[in-house]
Amino acid sequence: PKPYLFIGGGVYSIKREGATTANKSGWSFGAGLAAGVMKILDIEIRGRCSIVAWDGSTSKKALSVTGGVIYYFGKE
Image (cartoon, rainbow, N blue to C red; front, side):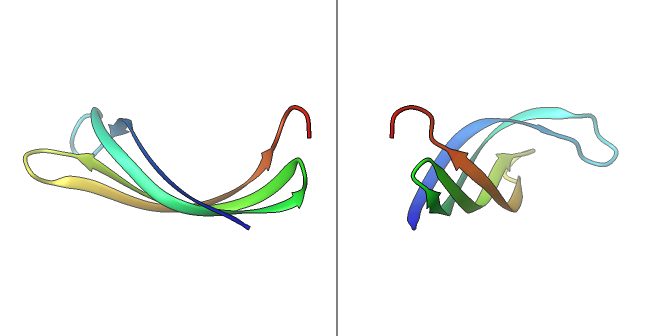
């Protein structure tokens, strides 16, 4: 198993009911676990928390869990 942590920032498109869509800056962080199936192939699952600034001192928060496949290109 290959555990990992990540952190990042970006611009998020947000729409609230009764309001127009807005682009706001925010950041996300999380952790994941990848497990090798073959030398060039891993399967992984990760959890992420995204936090985006909104009006004043409030913020929008979202939690997500995703899974996927990682293929390593190049020489073994």
